[in-house]
Length: 415
Ligand SMILES: *[C@@H]1O[C@H](CO)[C@@H](O)[C@H](O)[C@H]1NC(C)=O
Ligand SMILES: *[C@@H]1O[C@H](CO)[C@@H](O)[C@H](O)[C@H]1NC(C)=O
Ligand SMILES: *[C@@H]1O[C@H](CO)[C@@H](O)[C@H](O)[C@H]1NC(C)=O
Image (cartoon, rainbow, N blue to C red):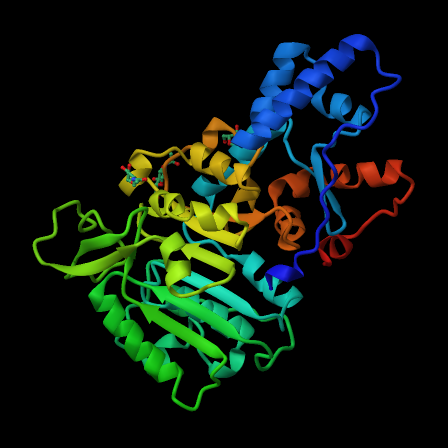
């Protein structure tokens, strides 16, 4: 499915600089050098600060005037790769207010982008890696969308496996909205479900046996792997009496050290894709109760090679989030050409190059990132609060170039 990505990206090399007055040229050359440096290091927002320092020119105007565009054309959208600082702050506070007003606003997101992905690519082969597979609800979500004939959905999991607990986000009641008319899968779907807890692992095997009988199609695979994923390989211990979703490598959710534990293999995503010969990942889900930043550190090779299209992880006040800043992770991913948003029950909140300190709020949240060259970039951006509030700006360049019809939401969202 990765090959389905066909968005274009504007060339970033400067055109001729004739007709531009000298002082501006100086700014622009400085900006160009700075841009290259910043591009390498990740974090376009630094460029904004840098430009203010060299001359205070409006960054968009200065760069656009020499053909150095700071935007990406994806689908029907021309997406600006930076936010004005006043927009960043307004959008961030809109997000923070929602987290207060709407219960579990980003803690238990709707993940509408997943439904949208299925709607646009219902019959492409799919590879999913689910790290922290837990009870299998997110795996069930994927199967219910792409292979509905299995009858394996979050709200049907307990019909065959009533012993399985419901899940912190009431996952067992989640009804997946399938908008497409797909009744049956038409391409291979492979899902690696990686879970360190022996207890969950035992449950997952029984769930797999219940929904994937020997007669089920061989091109629908749910591989259950007992391992902990981190930034190093080896062996680790994991608490044995783990019944809730909050157990992690660090110990029990109440902070006590595990007394009874099991040995589990410790691996990294980079090692995992080699061991299991996974060529590319369409969706990578990471939910390791606070260790997600560490898992991302152990995925650098796969991410740097652009082998992941969409990536989701949790952001927390627990685990190694005490050591890592979300901003640093978002900037690292930006450097690898991924754009990240807070996922939520409604709109997405773009963080990449729209950063505001209000986002570093250390609370239970979900983040979704997309590779800039993937067709889902336009889809995620069209779900963002920035698009909702500043829609006209996504078509401004096109209108100026004389291509402009006033687009509808459907136009914007079509692949
Ligand atoms: C967020 O809430 C505060 C307090 O209610 C309000 O003053 C502010 O305007 C809100 N900001 C946004 C962007 O919604
Ligand atoms: C792995 O992650 C841990 C915890 O985040 C960190 O302390 C350690 O330095 C990392 N090691 C490597 C080799 O990246
Ligand atoms: C974090 O979430 C808790 C409830 O989940 C809430 O009471 C608290 O105000 C939140 N903190 C911030 C900084 O938003």
